[in-house]
Every structure is written in C-alpha cells, then in structure tokens.
Length: 637
Ligand code: ADP
Ligand code: MG
Image 1 (cartoon, rainbow, N blue to C red):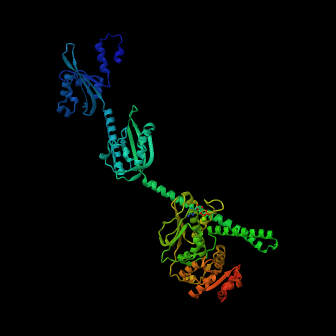
Image 2 (cartoon, rainbow, N blue to C red):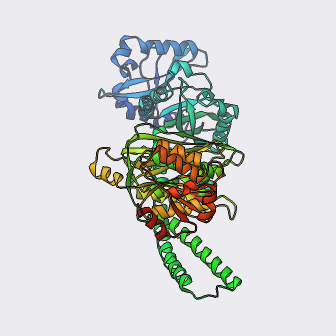
Image 3 (tube, protein in one colour):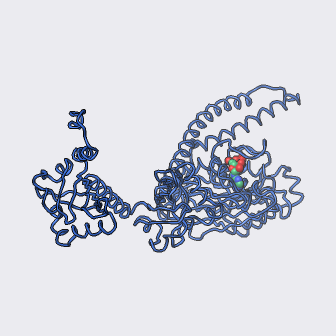
C-alpha cells in the first residue's frame, strides 16, 4: 500500500502492481513454487505465518513446511502431482514454522501454465486456521461431554424424538424409568409410553402439536412402563429447530414423581384430618357454652312453671301451661344432646359387657325400625368388658339405628355387630393404639357422599327435611365416644350402605374395682306396650341407679330374662296385648323366685282384681306414679 501510494506518478506495469499487491497481503501466505517444488517467491503473509524471510527460503524445497510424518509419507510430492493432474489440490493439515512449532492450515495449490500451456510451476495459498480448528475441536469436545452427561443421567429420562414422534436416542434414565433398552425403543413412536386411555384420546399427538406451536409442552400425567405398571410423570417436550427455523425434532425430559405425588397427597389427607378435628373441637366448645346458658334459662322457666299459681278450673290456662311445660322439656332434651356433643355431660361409667347392653335394648332398637327392615345381631363371644355409661350408650345406639332406618325408606337390613379389636397406631383416625371393643352398626341404605361424611358429625348438620332431622344424632354419638376415651369411624359410599364403628376402650376382665362396681348395679326389666310410658319408667329407674332392660310385650320380656340371669327387678304394665302383666308376673315368680316383681296400671286395683285375683300376690303401683312412690315400693319387702 505504501509503495503504491508513495509513487503515484511512477508508470507501473499491471504485472508489477499485482506483484506488489500479493507481496503486501499478510493474512494469506501466497508464494510460488517451480515445477520441482522449489520456492520462487514469498509474500508478507508467508513470512508472518512461517517465520522465514524471503531470502532465507527462496531456492529451498517447500517440503520443509510439512511435518516429518507427512514428509516421510511423501505428501508434498503427492500434493503437487494432484495439483498438476487436476489443476488444483486442496487440503487442511499441520504445517511447521521455522521455529519448529506447528499450525493448522488450509492449503490450496494451483498448477500454473504459461500462455503456451507449458507448466511453469505452482501457486500456493495457505491460511492459518488454527483458531478455527481449535474452536471446532472445543465444540466437538463439549458436544461429546454433553452427550456423555445426558447418557449418564439416571434420574431423568432424556431422549429425542423425530418431528413425527419416533424415539431417536435414549439415555440411562429413560431405560431405568421406563424399563426399555435403547434397542427396543429407538425408531418406535413415543405414544407407547402413554396409557391406553391417553392414546385413545389422541394425547400424544396433542403434546407434539403443542410443543411445535408453542415451543414447549409440560404436563403431569400417568405413564406406562414396559412391564405395564404406571408411574406419575412430569413431562417436558421442547421443540428443536435448526438455524433456519425448521423443526428437526423434540427433546423430551421425563421424571418419575410418583413418590412426590404420594407424599403430597398424604400431607393433604393429614391436613384435612387435622382441620376436621380442630373444627369439631371448636364447634364443641361453642356448643358447650351455648348449651349451658340455655340450660340455665330452662331451669328458671321450669321451676317457675311449677310454682306458678294458675286457675286449675280454666281449661285454656291449663293448656297454655301445658304447652309451656312441653316446650321446656323439648328445650331440656336439646341441651342434653348439645352438652353430650360438647362432652360436658358427666358420664356414669360402669363396667359392662356391651353384648348384654345390646340384648337388653334390642326390643327398643327393633321398634325404632319398621316392618320392612330386618334386624340382625352378630355378637362376638368372649367380648372384653368396657367402662361405659349404659344410658348414654343406648342413646347412641338408638341414634345410629334411627339414622339407618331413615336411610332405608324402602326397607333393608340393620346389623349390629360386636368384636374385640387390637388397634395399631393410626389405624383409625383419632383413635389411639390399644385394646378396644368395636360396635358396628351397618345398614343397606342410601349411603353418604364424601361431603356428607365430612360434615355428618357437626351439630345441626342434617340432610333431612325440616322437622325430620335435628342434625344432633351423630354429633352426640361423637361427643360421647370421645368422652369415653374411644372413637368413631364412618365407612359409607353413595348407594352402598353405611357402617358406623364405635370403639370403646376395653378394660382388664379381672380388674377387681370394676367387678365390684358391676355387682353393685341392680338391673331392672321394664315391660310396657306403650313406648312413652316405658321410656318414662326406664328414665326413673336409671335416675335411681338401675341398669334398665326394656321389652314391649311379655314374650320379649321372658326372652330377655332367659338370656340375662342377673336381672333383679321386673316392672311390668298390667294391661298388654297377648300375655298380660299378671300372667307374666306369675310365670316369672315360678321361674325366678329371686326376682322382685312390681306391677303398674292406670286401672284401679279393684277393677283388675275382678279379672285376676293373683294380682294381690304382687306389689302394685297406680299410674301415674311419682319417683318417690316407685322408690318406696322398691324398698317394700
Ligand atoms: P339427623 O339424623 O337429625 O339428620 P344426624 O347427626 O344423626 O342428624 O345425621 C346427620 C346426617 O348424616 C343425616 O342427615 C344424614 O345425611 C347422614 N347420615 C347419618 N347416618 C346415616 C346413615 N346410616 N345412612 C345415610 N346417611 C346418614
Ligand atoms: Mg339422626
């Protein structure tokens, strides 16, 4: 350049100018060889790359630029021969500098002919592409490393798909997670990893289409292993495009997150259970508070009513007072129910065999059903004794049986079963490990939805129409079981019936304290064909500490007496369909002379005497009677 511009006026031949141009180029080594390979010219680039000055190299054979191995293999001469034969030789290769260091070159050798066509030598253009070569090698190496990395990953299935979804490669993780070896899957469609349902729904194609359109597809779903088992997979599909934007395939990464899914589901369940128990606790506290206040109000009302002076002869004032009294009674029973849910009713626990409690209460339970409902008892022999409040236990059973009846409007079967159960930790939610007696009340009725199950124990939750349900049955049972140190579990599904399991902690059969407690309890059998009257009598007996069995006719009464040898008092109505009370009393006297017998009737004694003189042999009580009357007669010899 300098030379060119330094002498602009100098007349220069085109040849000379070209010579100057070539000699000035420093990015390419450009030089000439004679037909024998001797260097005849040299430019700045050649000097820069190879380290020789022109005067050091011109006249020497060009093979000195080659490595020893290339020289020994005759490469320099072969290059010239090829250039001569084909007009041109092109190659890449290592060359040697003057100082012995090597560099990677791209070489072009052109054979040169003069105008007469005579071969006068070779033009040689050499470029130093060491940098490019290094970059390529580095790239290759990093690709190699990356491939090894992907191949070696075992926690993720990483593989590629063709644009149409065939597997094109396969890593160790894919083999581990899906169970196929590379040979088995390469070339086959990735749809085989989907469930039959997903394949039928066309999901594999949708996944690829989404990745193609949006660049990426991500999903959690079930996938199928080679052995047919399923795993919960996290799947990512990325579209891969070349520099021109053409889709060349998909990269697919799949992770087996079955364990993670299971863990998070277990956590969710635990949270739900915790929430449920906290909710019940909170509602319990609230309910207890309200019930106490309410109960106090009722006692004020109730006491007031008893002392209120009113006109006995005025029928309308009698009516008002009567309806007030009934309202107070209803309110009182409501608060008892609430208090029992809130576990604030004192328990009168005694040692009992639940089988005998159930047998004694069976006739009431049967009557709670109706003629289209069958009734079974499956009572386990050798049932462990429990500490339980018998009256509350019977109320609980009755609640469950009434619910079962309501769930079977067109009939069905109620089965009450008992069983000894050794509970492991966590077996039933909310019930500690230990020895229990289980009482299961099963029906074949409508069953409950999940939503109903989750709320069934809440007070006032009912699905029944207004007037039919109070929503206090199960909440009471729940509170009672908790208070008794036991628990309750529901298993039910819509249309498949319901089973409610009660768990009461068993006590040691030989524990003396409880033996004494049991022997001190007197047992009475109350017989009356009128339910309300019977209930009242039963309540009176309970209030003075009796354990009560009930029957609504003489025949049922005899059955109970036959099964339960420890009944000490028979309290029977006189006028009953079938065998009447006097006949029953005579029977029992012959059968079990140790039993104390009380007869009660709304009819005056003289009228009854005309029917059956034998009534004189028994203690007689006129209805309506008061507790004090009853107590007095019981004490009578
Ligand atoms: P109630 O009987 O007054 O409705 P409960 O507390 O006894 O109140 O029961 C609450 C709800 O639980 C019922 O309304 C009903 O939806 C459901 N339920 C209880 N027991 C059963 C059962 N055996 N079969 C079907 N549903 C039941
Ligand atoms: Mg109910």
